[in-house]
Image (cartoon, rainbow, N blue to C red):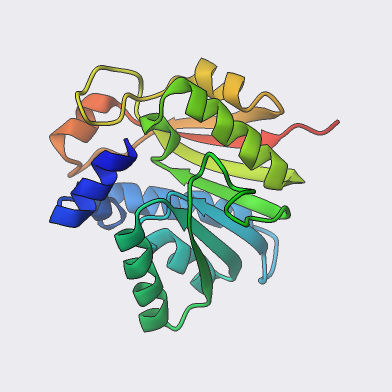
Length: 205
């Protein structure tokens, strides 16, 4: 899947970059607002998994979060850094794998983690690796916001992931909320994939 994304960024075919401009983007903003309710910035550290060209990383920084974004595609990371500089936003971008956060220099202490379309494209063993790595860098009261396609055969597109597989990968977490995408104006392949938003909270021992 990493080769797929590298190729897509190389040739400029990145339809997922349109998502923030669709109604789904406002739905995602509402989820972020809920995490901020009753608090004042700075809100704390957040980790943007598979940050791509940095749209959500920059948006989070502008909202008052201390943001680190990580992505495996060098071109995407370069564009993300340019985006942050252009917006005057302070964001740390790391080139590395979401399956090896510690090896990429990601230190513990994140209270909010974003996975906006990352693990649903990974094979099962890598999904479990991401779960372990995220748990290692998350605070005891951390929240994970995820969106994912439902499982299905889609050729080179993300295979999707179901609630059960998410719960298995994040065994130390619990899903507190699940809601369907607002699919207005979404591309046909997104509508067919029936994507869902999930909110996970790290279980308190």
